[in-house]
Image (cartoon, rainbow, N blue to C red; front, side):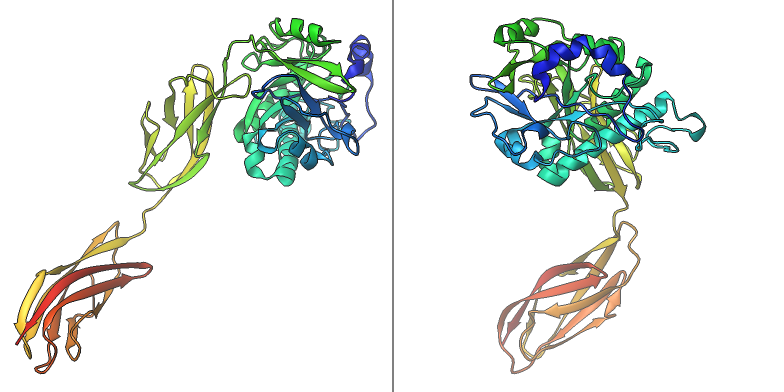
Length: 449
């Protein structure tokens, strides 16, 4: 990431940077970012963002990572679309800046917000408010990505969170952890959170060295060369969840080494479809995919335990949802150990319908005679309206009547053939219509001499 070549200097001055407050109303910036790991052939990957606007991009990267912000939360990268194209389009990974300036310095502070947590106006400097701030900042970053790339690419890309002292943070690390929790929870609800970008020192200053996010791997900055980056790969990572990427400067850009020795660890679970609408009495099959710390599907998928918050039942191991009560949306959860993913399902009432039948199936008469059939209407799902009947396929010159023409139960169909009419076997089609529902049934009519 551009600007991290001076990261060693930044680390030395980190405490001073943390103490510097931006002007009121500004959510302080961080020039560098975080990256996602994608399967690569050989060579390093690279991460770029707004500092590369108007300049060249690294050539032939093994994988590409793009920052969605202009170094600061609530500010879009103006070159996001072109940089994602460089990074491989749908193969690109994304990262979002983070921060926690507090209520006195941010024009985006969520005072009075009640969802997802309650940020009281009487206590706006709270963990709940910090959580909402991080949640909102991540939502804004995701919205910027959707505008530039579309919803499919934004949801399908692994996302990383950039945690650096060059952004504004509180001295109370519990508030900073709350803000990061909000960011993780939002991005986890719409996409795949791959992990965090930082250094052990900066992570300690900002979060107090928390292990709250140990389920997520680290992307470690600060190496001076590939050898240093390789050495960083061997560490436990500042989150405690292992190291996925290690960054170092290369040719005026930020290069990223894949830590291939790290064992895959289940980090996130996505549930598909992400949302569904199911009629009462019907079913919907949900599926789950587990991703490792590299942002890749687990080569051996773990067993998932399924649950639903209401509206019906779901097979605990199959993911097959059966709707029973119209309402929602309800939450479908697939879990494996402490890792889980969710989707939403809304249950709607099954529209009132009917079925139609004709008996007997075949009638034979002489020309000039009358054929009689019984049409039966069977309501379903609470249907109560009358079904209007019509006929087609009768011999030319013949006439017909339904008695009655509209019914909720049965009607008698009388077909009168013409004495000089055609002979042969005819297929009669009786059609019933009730509102938007139309059904048909057929019967044979044989006319002899």
